Image: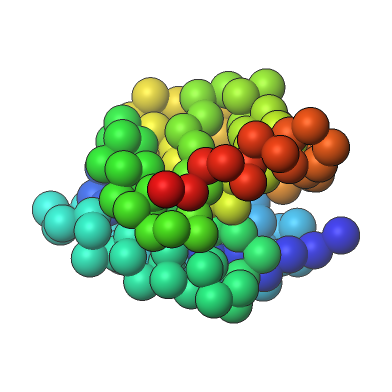
Length: 144
């Protein structure tokens, strides 16, 4: 199965995003990169807000954000009422974010993961599905 995926992030996650972008292209997913396009210092909200808005409008199946720690992009994305952004630093956390929390934005700490770890995390998230059931009841309680 292929997906329409939004990518974005800041300078701290640029190298990780470039690797993941190539991986997803090889897997035949449709991508849109909201930037940044190099390692020059930028303000991550400038890239996160447009991505989050597009995911909220269901223009994409989900988004993947990258920064050094993933904290800033995750905090920013979660300001949007219909975004459920989750930080994942391993494949199991990535799968659970989608299976149990129906995460629609995955946040990657680019400075702390090697290419093998990135590939495992991305594949785990992309291939996971929301389990619904008792988890849906909990997800329904997330918005304020």
